[in-house]
Structures are given as structure tokens and as C-alpha cells.
Image 1 (cartoon, rainbow, N blue to C red):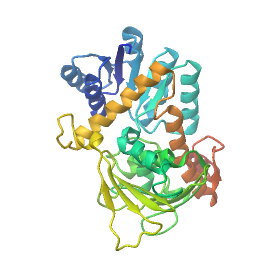
Image 2 (tube, rainbow, N blue to C red):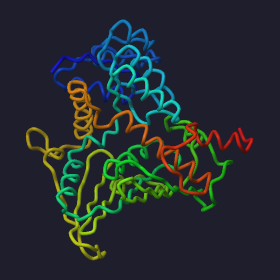
Image 3 (cartoon, rainbow, N blue to C red):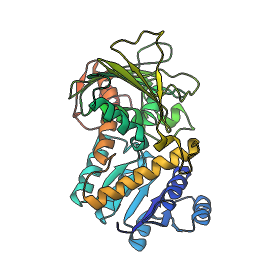
Image 4 (tube, rainbow, N blue to C red):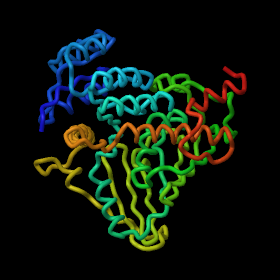
Length: 375
């Protein structure tokens, strides 16, 4: 394998996580980082021994990395991706891919035009449990897969959660269901009132502690999805006040059994055999050493699993570059997840199911505000 020189844009918490992941991968060298906050840049540079810049384009021009990791907030994913692609630099970008589909379309098209690999950090795709589940489905262990049920972990109103953890959850359903044919959603406020155009807010207006992810709507959300292969899904965001990571995940329901996957980073898996699942019949736990144990056979903690999955995602990008294939979580996959989020709002606005690809591509909440004269 070739040696890859890697730079990072955005040197906050995720910028440090990715730097740690890079430093533990063979064939990789962390060479630089870009950050507008001088104190943050200085601390990151001291920690990882790499040069820092306050201008990412200057960094790209002077250091000429092979790969750039974009760890900024969502409004600053679009421009750096274009800048990297136009210089022939491969891109690994944090989620969500962008604020709207117009940006996402341009990002995907530009990377393809310049023949660079474009990956999104939907880190759940790095879990060995996913391949294990796909193998068991292919083997017929739960019969025909007919339905998915997916659950948010709480701690946020639905609108914010859709653009934060929801982008992972929708992407996870696509991994098992395939491309989306249509989506039908309904959004309500916490008191049960239907969400209206007057309830559209900016993410940081809803919660100042959250990252900037643009306009959002809804405090609770209920989505129904039909995948092109015939599988149906239900996804719910019911805004429980407290976070419970054990609630986050997917049930895969087949004609002869069920599989349950839980956890935002590390995965726990359960299986139930049989065409029906009465509430008094227990699940069986399935454990995989490939994720649960470290190289010495000791149980991994949450941070160790996060680092493992980030390295698996970055390693997959390297393999995609070497073999000229798409990454496991490609830019197209990131766009598809965002499209499901945007279709959620569009379906609620129109009060009907909407087909995908979504058209028009402008943010549906911006269009709703424009059409209503509420800006």
C-alpha cells in the first residue's frame, strides 16, 4: 500500500479524535491541521506534533496532502470539500454531509469530476456487527427481511436529532434496506400539536449547545419508509428527556426471526428465532470478539471502540483509493441520508408521502418559509 499524508480541517474534539485515529494507522502520516481559533490550533499542534494553519486553502496548497479530514460543523463542509477535490485531494468528511441537497449534490459531483474518493464518517458502518448481520440475513437465519424499526436515543428534540444522530440512524437503515423509494413523516411538538411553519428554528435556537446544522423542525417525529427492494421501516424520534444509548438502534424483523442492534458507537446484538416474538420469550445475546475485545483479548471500553471504528472507516477509505472503488460510507451515501432527513420535512409539509430522489433540491424548510412569507 502507498503512504498517505493526511491533513485535518477543524481542530476541535473531532479533530483530535481523528488525529488520534490517523496516528495509529499504518501507511498514514499526520502532517498538518487548519483551525481559525489560535488557542485551539496551538493546543492541537502541541498534542500531535503537526503544523497548524489558520487558512485551510493555504494549508492544502503548501502541504499538498493526499487526504483531508473535514471536522468542521455542517455549514463548513461544502467549501473545503470542493477546494480539496479541485486539488485532487481525497476527502473524509464528518456528518451531516451538508446543510441541503444543493450543496451535497455539488460536493458529490465535484469529487467525481476530479476522480477523488469521498467518504462520510457514518461510523456505525465500521462495526463488524453489520457484516455479521448481513451474512445471517443472506443465510436465511431470520427468513425474509420485511421490516425495520429504528429508535432515537433521546436527549434532543427531533429536528436537532435528525441532523445530529439521525443522520447515522437513517444511514444505518439504508445499509440493511437499500435505496429509498418513498418516505412519509409526521412531526409534532411535545404537547402533541402538529408542527407548523412557525415552529421552524435554527438548531442553536433550539439548543445553544448543539452544533450548527441549519434550520430544523419538530420536537417528535414519526417516519415510515419504503425501500426499493420491498423492505419497510419505521423510525421514531420521541424526545425522551434523558439519553439512553441502549434505546438507540434497529430491530430487523424477518418472517422467521428478529435481530436487534443497539448502541451509537459500540454495538450490542440480540437475536430471536421464530416467526413471532411474544413478550415473554427472551432474546439471545450475540457477541463478536472483533469489536468487543482488544488485541490482547481484554474487553474494549467505549473510547476504545470509537477509535477502532474510526480507524476501520479511515482504513476503508485507503482501500477504496488503492482499489479504485467507492468507500463503505461514500459521499453518495451521506447525501442519501441527508435526502431522507430533508424528505422527512417535505413529507410533513405536503402531508403525504414523497418519492425519492427529492425534487426540488432546495432546503424544504427554507421553501416553506418563503412560500408562507415567514422569513
